[in-house]
Length: 90
Ligand SMILES: [Zn+2]
Image (cartoon, rainbow, N blue to C red; front, side, top):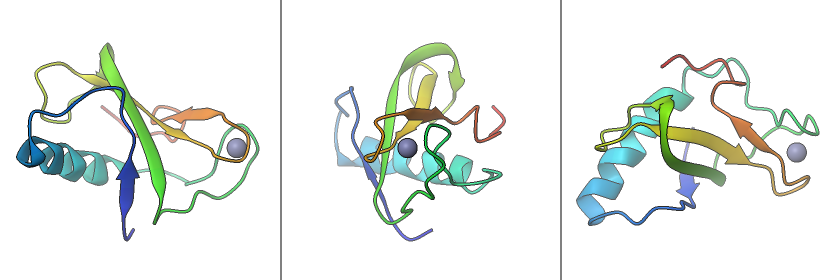
């Protein structure tokens, strides 16, 4: 995986925090069983992934105060494939 571009509903405190979360998300993503959209079946472009996140008790720990619900937005069909659907454990 070369590069992940995030778009998030949250604001990060600073670039350090953003980089820390980026690293945590990366380490979760490499555990995915596939990198395909569960809406349309398209293979995600891992150089330009749009990872979305928001506070959620059932989410993943990415180094922030609260756990985050994580998903990848498909630009083709608009579906959010959650990390859960990619079989990424918490
Ligand atoms: Zn799709």
